[in-house]
Image (cartoon, rainbow, N blue to C red; front, side):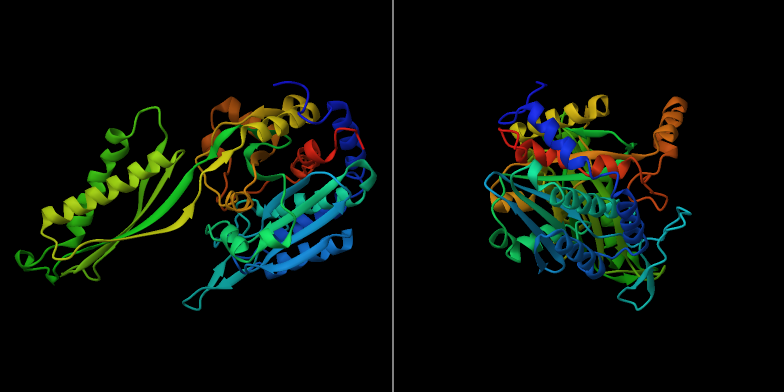
Length: 432
């Protein structure tokens, strides 16, 4: 990678970064306190009322123009600083319905009410609280160093990433009409690698994903009279077995694909043969062609097994929780990568593709602009090094969505307050 950044002199970027980041030490206590507060008070998707209020209040205090309740709980802050590029940076806000088991003194004890009326534990098991604290930190730094950059900085706080509807909700809520069109959109995610490191790569980075609900039909009967039935549980079992060959025999060995049957529901009692069964599947890929192959194969297998079993009714297919492919723009990624390598040195690296999925890309697609998405480390470097030496990283380092997932506060916040990525555009060719 070249040491310079297109349309930016590396020395100008370095000077701008030094100036903007000069306020980082003074805000450390505030940012850490903010993060702990967010971690203590997680909220599920489209219910991030408190988190959104915290973000909006902070942005107003920094002097941003603020728009709230975009879609559902989405918040956007706009900081204009003369002529120049516009950079949008996004943080997701939602948490997960699970009980925290980190043992932290700032662990979540929050619960929410599910459809049955029972209390459901909630925790930030994916690091979105880190993301919010980092973006608010960046907003504070930009607002405090207006003479070091030029252009417009847009801080976007998105709801409901975990259920893949938050980005679309903000688009449908008119976000593209509320804020200036960005020249680039940026986002990041804390992951289970050493804190203080940052990794980015061009092209496909996060997989596209779809969940599918398949309902197959049989003919109900008493368990003692199976000859009178078409057993949908047996039918569902045959579908599961047959689907195992799709990736193994229909996808090229060098092409990434995952097909998981995560749930089967059928029947209500041991001696009753039900009249239907439901399967819930998840697929992931790095290309639209592979996605289409997987979807077509699922439908073909399901219909074939239904015909073989004599199913009296056609199966039903419902796709939900669609996550688009996260496909980083090559030129914009080269620009961010060069900025990272100039600032972080050996702690910046080319990260592997990740099989997880995101809906962030719906926002830059709606604007029609390039985007870059990268990973920041959240694991204690010494703990990670010990696990790596012992060959136990996959078994001892809690990953995202684990009840033990707990990023170390520093240097995670310091590395994630990613002003250098935005400054690859906002520092300006003349070094402002």
